[in-house]
View 1 (cartoon, rainbow over the protein chains, first blue to last red):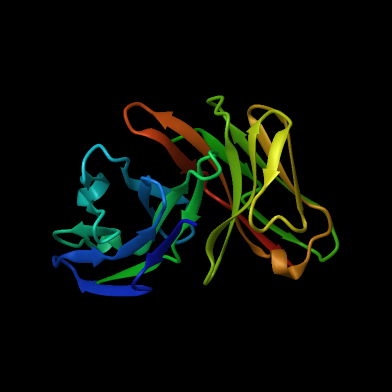
View 2: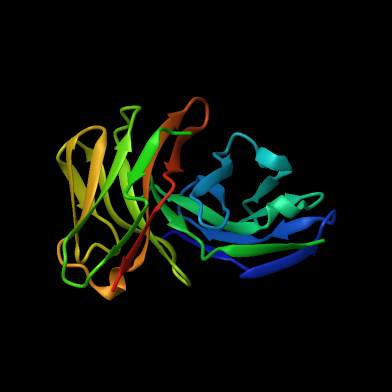
Length: 115
Length: 115
């Protein structure tokens, strides 16, 4: 069965410092992995997507993630946090066992950015 | 913007009443999904559709039904609302992105409170 584990429920950083949000996955197949961001009272916005074309994936707003098969990880990083990055972030794997593109979500990581 | 519109965006209803949430898309995507989001549970799939009149259950389908009579509309119905169905409901579509395969995009959400 496929699953996603976000290792931190809450991360706090100061503005201008690096961001690291950790995600481990479990999948019997070559996975498609995603990071979504959700600002308060808003829908989910796609940050970036991994589909085996390149292990380092660049997304919007300066975020990137690196797929490491040996570690089954897909951590999200950003060199310098901005106040507007404060939000909830979801690591997601696509469930290909059903061939419907259904998503399996991690529990989410709340990112707090302090001035 | 994946052309997804949810209605109503906010609703308060009484226990035992029927409620229908509507998802409308403008780009003829085949796959549509209904998720609910609750604290501590992330997003969980309720039902999905893979074409007109073709639907299937997700992991939390009890108490919900869906219908898709047209490609563009996917309706979620709570036949008799309960307080446990107080949640935020997200509609999503699966779109084929050139070069990267299928990506799921979300609507802005419908906030439902059952009192």
